[in-house]
Image: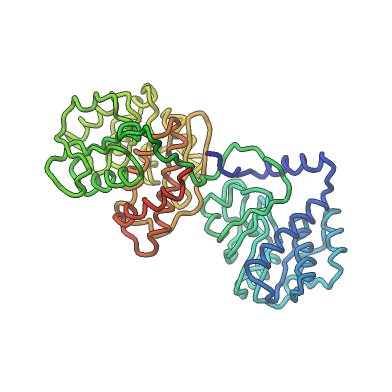
Length: 462
């Protein structure tokens, strides 16, 4: 699995410098970027009247190129600037535009506004003389497009430095930036489309979680080679049932609900009374423990037994509460990496002193525990103790309902049983969970995700 790179401002600058070293001029790269952004806006919104807001730097230069290209396409386009260009390339782009340039705070609204005021590298709030007219013009637009990043956004940590109306579409130039995938900025970007401007292959320190390639079982496959997943039952049978059903629908060959007796649907789910010796089965590919487990007595004992095995573990919900209470010192000594799946509140209990972005927090947690951290949120972050990290695209908001985390834990159990690298397994689970939510649509409940997993997984079969 190799997702798209997510760059910092410094990494973006280094990638651009590598392009310039190959003989491409700054204006040449600006022209390619602006024309690509214009064509994406044209494809999405058509020939509607457009106002392009240009700042003084190279992001504004992109805006002049966009305006010129849209004019070539027959669009009625106007340009408003916050000031004169301050870079050679932006000045050249303004000359190439050649049309009138309105003063920003005197400009009239338009149905489509393209924000090319400030992009990558912004580090301070916008001045009121820019923020106020920009906010007025953006708020009046039916459609808003941001060039590279919406103005007022910090590139690397996703902070909102200035409150402006959010974009409907953001055209990321060359590569994703961290602000496209870190909250709260990610919520201001709308849909994000990456425009290829010839940056080549930028560094992949942090990547986006992408569609996972999943191998269909071969003729020689059996239920154990497809992965045996054990789900530990506990005090809340609904949670463990959701995790078990999700593990089945995610493609596990054998799912055993350990600690739950009796018959029920589906009959393919193996229900077995709790037996400590059952954890010694070498055929177990992964164990899910925590959903509905309980945090006293037998729940703690079952977690202790699971931690003492060499099986890959998914530690979720009540297992995380117990770890926060009893200490994380047992995790780094385990032979197989565990995957911890906290939401924000659980993370705060596990790592009360950690701060920074969700990416920072996930990396800190992974380093401290020697485990993979899957930090759940709008844009879920997966981090490995070796420093690798990946961030998911914004997930459907309808996933914010009870039981959806239990479904994610079950999917992760199957991916962990089938894949050699728990970092890759966690990414696959996040993507499949989000895709199942997208397929389920509005007003979903956790049970719906299980039903839509089949289609999500089928769409990934290699």
